[in-house]
Image (cartoon, rainbow, N blue to C red; front, side, top):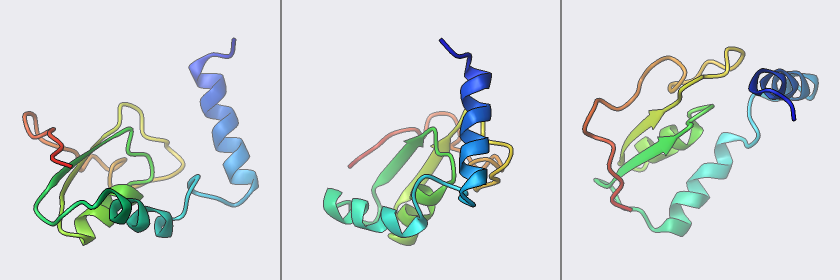
Length: 95
């Protein structure tokens, strides 16, 4: 079984070779929020927020969106990767 570092390295090499920064473009996330029928004022917690695209889409929709990532991908800086995370005690989802 590969180690976490081997998987991480493969992932970064694979997406870099395709010229991609994320598995999904930003445009994929607003329809997800629409399907979930989330409303402005709700709170969203994105665990393992990666690119931060879901956070951005949620904030644009008026949600209080927080992200958490234990190990942001160094190659892809994002709102989540730059440390804009929830403060302790605000990690609730009201979807």
